[in-house]
Amino acid sequence: MTSSKRHAQIVSSLRTKGAASVRELAESLQVSESTIRRDLDLLDRNGELVRTYGGAALTPRAAVPEISFAASAEHDSAEKEAVAARAAALVEDDMVVVLDIGTSTRLLARHLRGRPVTVITANLAVLDELRDDEAVRLCLLGGVVRRNYLTLVGSLTETALRQVRADLVFLSCTGVRPNGLVVDDMEVETPIKQAMIESADRVALVASEAKFPGTGSLRVCSLAQVDALVTTAGADPKTLELCRQAGGKVFIA
Image (cartoon, rainbow, N blue to C red; front, side):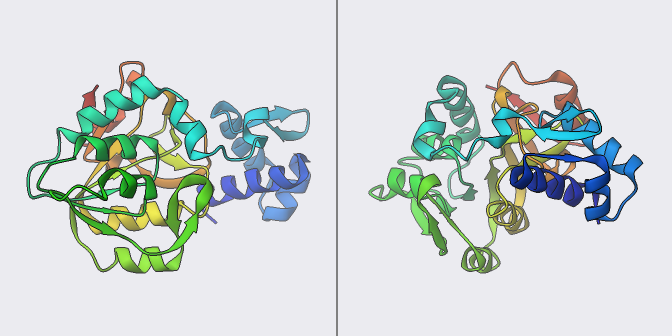
């Protein structure tokens, strides 16, 4: 089992139980207690849980259910708008682009209105932005509707992504870790993001400063797989340098 999968199972277990001891986690995951201690220390530093004597518990934020799309749109709205505008400048006429779920990509779609581009998406908010725009060729992926976050998910979405090829994917996330991991907090969304990465020639990550380190324990990709990172001035400079060292370009909105 990889460390990222182990971390996801630890957080999932804590969501069910609220708290767990090192011994309980070691037995359930069939690894040593020293391995679990290292996992818990890392997850504690990343804000996914709180280390307690002999174990761990969820942070109050981690225990809160997923917020709605409308509520998420209100958070850091100025930063998201700046990121969206800068990201849209990376799109050239006649490009084929994939737009991930999220509020930033909805704003990005708004900046693509009137452009001769093809947009592929599973984001229903992007559909709402572009449905009446005759300049944009819009391709909506199939799937099961997640009404709370206005997206399409599931095997139908993944299958559809295997049938398309894009110049560029704009990827969203819930966290960018100091070690260069790009993470998310929804199991149902993560495989869709990974399929989007596979469908495109280049990957652009849109992540305002609030995503450094953000939240989430599910590995989406690493910064080594990112060709461009669009963020705001408050993002962690060491993490941005990791992206540059891996060959990615960093754009500050």
